[in-house]
Image 1 (cartoon, rainbow, N blue to C red):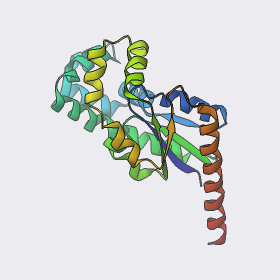
Image 2 (cartoon, rainbow, N blue to C red):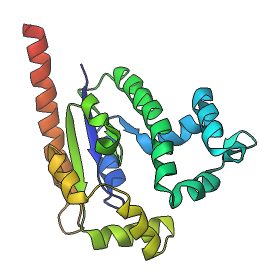
Image 3 (tube, rainbow, N blue to C red):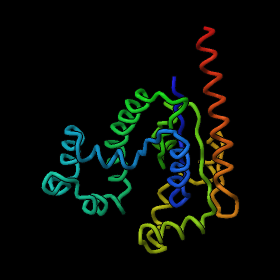
Length: 205
């Protein structure tokens, strides 16, 4: 059995960088954000629900009009909650199917909103990626070409990072002061040992 591992962190924490290191170590990574975008373009039932709730303009020539949808939910908390209630169950289900196909000792689901979406109940262990808020703001502005105010508004809609990190089983510090690779390798070795222990238990039982 493959252990199901969650990898999470706030906007600009650098969780994608950490996920890339795990992938380099031969661990498969499911990226929930990419999966959600794919499903919103490919899943007929999901498309139907989005059109029903956000109007026909949500698709242009059959493809998701991301800027239209972003504008519709950006400053409307109720609409954002509605969008999440439509997209999250489909992404969780897709992630579960993907997990079941993996054969490595463990596999990772990378998602910003593991706790907010309730998907922690489907995972065996959760890794948090932490970075100081000033660094997260700087990274997000640079990466997404956003203003400081836009980044702050998006961060305000996310779970408080301190609370999120307390809910994780372990935390990797990505503050550009501590080397990432040794931290990831330490967690990797721990998870391999965990997986080996679980396998041994299954064989005994």
